[in-house]
Image (cartoon, rainbow, N blue to C red; front, side, top):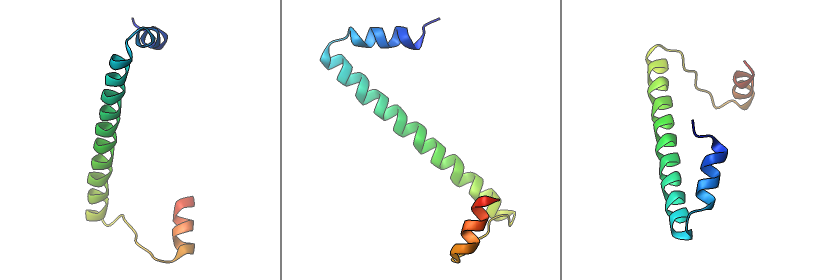
Length: 69
């Protein structure tokens, strides 16, 4: 099994161009994962809204209280 340390050591041994390519790929993977997470949260919010579980308010005190519960 490859450990994180092993991966870091391999990356350290790469050329600058290869390291930059890995950086580009990692940024892309992170963006894609974040996009998927946002979409999943959106779908969950849609379900909660359809069930009437979402509450909307422009009252700061109500919003603050809802974050505590």
